[in-house]
Length: 76
Image (cartoon, rainbow, N blue to C red; front, side, top):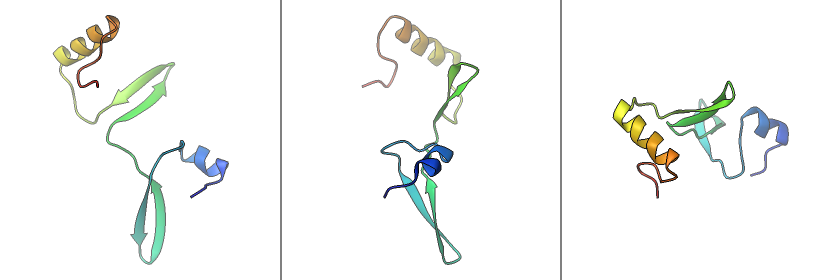
C-alpha cells in the first residue's frame, strides 16, 4: 500500500513500517503499529524507553559494553 508523503511524515512512518487495521463501528482505521519500546530524539540525544525500568547494574553493563566496543546484553 502506498501512502502520500505528507501522511507518512505526519505519522512518522518509514519504509517497512507496519500498520494495524482496527474495525470500529463499521469503519476500518489504519494505525501505525508501535512496539512497546520507543526511541526518540530529545535535546540532541537519543532516548530509549522499553516501558519497564532497568537496574543500575544493567545500565552500567550496557554502558561499559558500548564504551569497549562490545555488544550490549541481548545483542546478536
